Amino acid sequence: MRTAYRCRAYPDAEQRAVLARTFGCVRLVWNRTLAERHARYAAERNGTSYAETDRALTAMKKDPDLAFLSEVSSVPLQQALRHQHKAFTAFFEKRARYPRFKSRAGRQSATYTRAAFRMKDGTLRLAKTSAPLAFVWTWPDVDVTSVDPTSVTVARDPAGRWFVTFHADVPDPVPLPATGESAGVDVGLTSFAALSTGEKIPHPKDWERHEKRLKRYQRRLARCKRGSANRAKARVKVARAHARVTDARRDFLHKASTGLVQRFDVIAVEDLNVSGMVRNRSLARAISCTGWAQFRSMLEYKAARCGRTVVAAGRWYPSSKTCSACGHLLAELSLKTRHWTCPSCGTRHDRDTNAAKNILAAGLAAGADGADACGGGVRRAGATPARPPVKQEPRPVREGNPRPLGRRGCQGCDIHPPADANRAGVGHNRDVRVYGESGVTPHGGEAT
Ligand SMILES: [Zn+2]
Image (cartoon, rainbow, N blue to C red; front, side, top):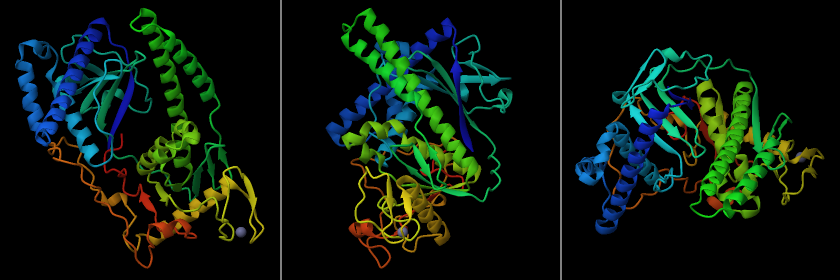
């Protein structure tokens, strides 16, 4: 299994200078290569392969105006090309947005492969620097001297904090003992999540406090004169406040997802269209704040590592409107209604707990069915081939326009009615994906 350890780094003055120059060169190589890709596509309608960008980098280094490129380690520059190539591949596979230009105000990073760093007895030495890089190891159960990273990334965030990330291949973790418990999770707005066991995970309270401070600093920044020293100071304050918000959020999501994975063998979640919901303005802030998508991906990779299963109930499955006791489907249920009584069996339901129970039932049914009869709408983790951990020669970026995704839904059969009919289907639970069975994350990539 491939994993990564990220920790705070404290470079000395010399290292800060070398790294700052390296960041600048990495950014320049990234931006020039991206601009050349644009120009070439606009002129010739042709994509650019990795080898072509590599040749362009060699030419850049020979340019007397860019002689400073040869003063920093060549490896991070090469890695910038690889990262951009990967970014385009992800874009063409519709996993990511179109790659953007890098700004000097954003996060800066440089990746070193084995040729450009030495890790011995827990000390790290980077190319072109003399002293070892100081960092704080924060995994008490992992011996730092035993870590043998394949690559190392040094980064500085806009708040001025330095980080070093060790990418390493480690033995597969031992699956956790089975607990015999399973749970459905309904993510909501009044509480962060409701479980089918009746428990609720409340929203963390301190986010609001952090956000208030962030807003105050942002107002202050907006009033500063552009290019002034006070503006630069205000910008650092905003960046620090941002960092505090994202750190608090990530901490909460990690604790919540680890708790679920430790307690339950099977975790059923709703397959939510989060980006579609953020487009709905009234709910946008609340939804993007809670970080559902991040929570979901944490659940999936942690489940895969611990031998747990995450199943996703279909997006159009009416989990809130169905009675979990008798299966009665309500015609209408407004978002405001927090409790309702089933007209058929008279059970009193808490909206979110009822939804979580239905999601669990849908997920378990999918697990018992095994594969979907049609093969449509179901994606099994095992079907995606895992990439070997060794470095591979990148494939050329596909030329021309992006191709539509290869995975097609069922085009209609006895079991799968056409798309519109799915919305009204009572207990329609065949539109279910199964993840986390064979230690592979949904995109077939490495869990990091
Ligand atoms: Zn009922």
